Amino acid sequence: MNSSASLSSLPLLAGAGLPEFQDINPDQVTQGIPLLLEKFKTNLARRFAAKQQQAILDLCASEARLAATPVNEFVDLFVV
Image (cartoon, rainbow, N blue to C red):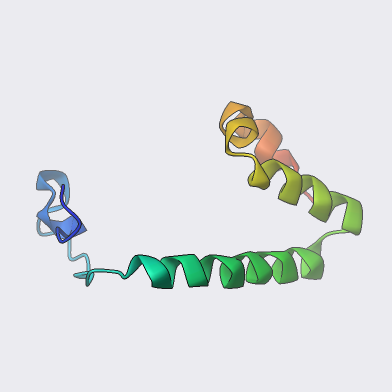
């Protein structure tokens, strides 16, 4: 699928009522990631103790570790 294709152009999703997405400037994505990370940290802090926040952040920071983590262990990190 090229970068200008939308999700609704996929055969499985055709007619699924998905919104059309405009082409996204890669610079906007790069600029938005730090903001998204700060939002994630802020919301973790509202819910979890510092040690639990750090465990979640550490795991999410490593794509390899995150991919290797069983779902039940990942979900367990979010138990209050």
